[in-house]
Image (cartoon, rainbow, N blue to C red; front, side, top):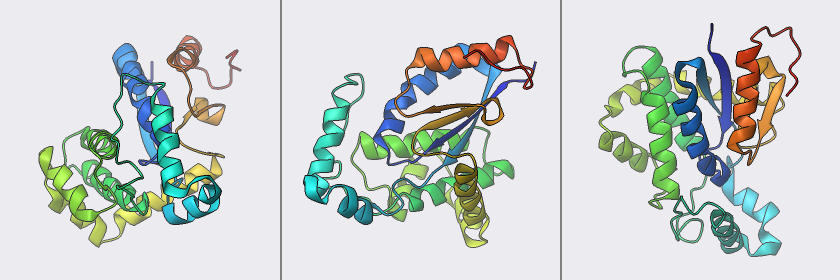
Length: 224
């Protein structure tokens, strides 16, 4: 049986995607090689200053948004948010870390990195922002994080220099638009027939996967 394909869209600066990480880990533990994740990016925080000015100017700006993020974190006591998020640490854009991560993905696909490098780097960079309060939009921060987990940053530079990382990121954003992805995180299953968006509980994710494992025929309508 082929594994259930899960296309997972997120923005690396989205706190709800950070909160979803334990659920994704549980999916990997519970289903193993019966599921296969394909990680994609969507540009929710592509223009952070513009987003804050448009959506949060009347609600306290960066400080108001920072308070909103910390309040959301109270629902997830198992996870720790750094107190400087959006108060002192204010990444300008998620496009920069997305581009760096896609460069690592391209390098992995070319056999220049061990399998799983991209997924591990994605989790580590997300944690660097939300747990350690680092500005992951800065290139030197991205490179420092890569070195800390034992990656050769020159493999990323190659995909950045020749434009392959840019093409891969552009493809992600185009796919998100074509699939009607409205925000982060979004999980796409069953060739686009099942879409799980936002703060979705593990049992809902599990039920959708179990249904596809029960009836893998894509022409069979799911009862989920």
